Length: 433
Image 1 (cartoon, rainbow, N blue to C red):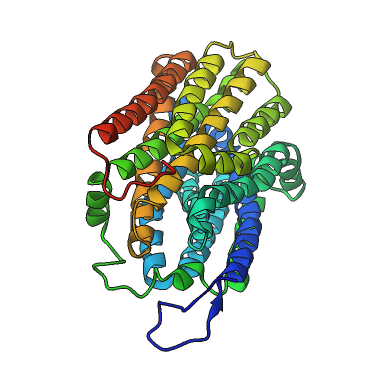
Image 2 (cartoon, rainbow, N blue to C red):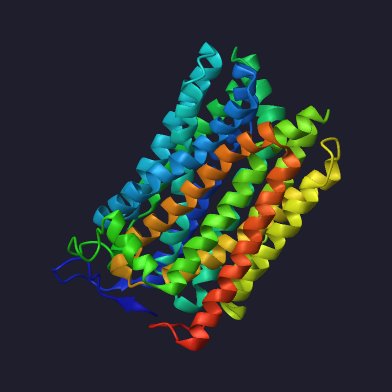
């Protein structure tokens, strides 16, 4: 049985059963992910619809939905800094509480019909989404290197239950329940989301003990070693070809998913499709994102990060073109295309997260991971904002062609990195890449 001394304290301590701690950590994160994923999707799935109802503007609807990524970008690095200083538990707990506050603000936007509350609330929900994403790194803190991607995939998979269920019942159950309580349209979905974020925070507070990052030795380092500022973290990433590719993979995976997803509900609505059809599309898209993640994680550990990133780019191209070529009343084509885009996201996020994690020592990981997630969320926000502008000025078809172009860029990035390593192997290269 694996035992280590807690390296984050100077005093001698009893030996820790790392395998037992890792099992408890994974179980805890699975529970928080289910709640956090359902809380996120139950509200986010109606964001564009509520914004359009309040303003009648596609551009503002796209901006409101993009605020999820803006909030995630804003919150990801400060949360990572907090984790580097104090551990995973304080950071994850705070992120879920901010997500709950955001969902309550969105409820108030629906009640008062005061639009500015909606993008502000969705931005805070975005911090909750950054928290959901950070759990994959918490699960990897104590994972064995040969099982790292599989562990990340397992945590990503947990979101299938929460997000998938949330997408199915947001419009069909939560929203009608809210109306029975006297809330306006879409208010019930956000209210349930707020309550679920609170449950996720409670699970983290009570169950994530001991803290996995503390046990791994990633807390208690000097400022220079552990709590790196954003600029220093980015310098480390830019100096490492594998890390650069990992962050590029996360950015493109997130941007293509957010960009194509942001206005698809409105696209379908304009084609005369029902709320049930939109809910099924969302559910299928989320299944693509999460359902196969344990298998994809295991496959990533076996075949390597680079082939999986190439696959992610190819799937992105195929899915975006399929959805973009389908008329707005074509349920099968839009749903199928968005499902493939979701699958591309899963391949890209798992492979990129594993590649970024193994590119740096544990003392630098939390800060570097936060910087990578900030880039990912920021590029996703840009894609979401651009989506509304592109559809308003051009068409949903052109939006998807742009997403397909990003998929091609990812493939080119992988091939360029591989060519560079053949010319001069990267320092600290690992066989799993």
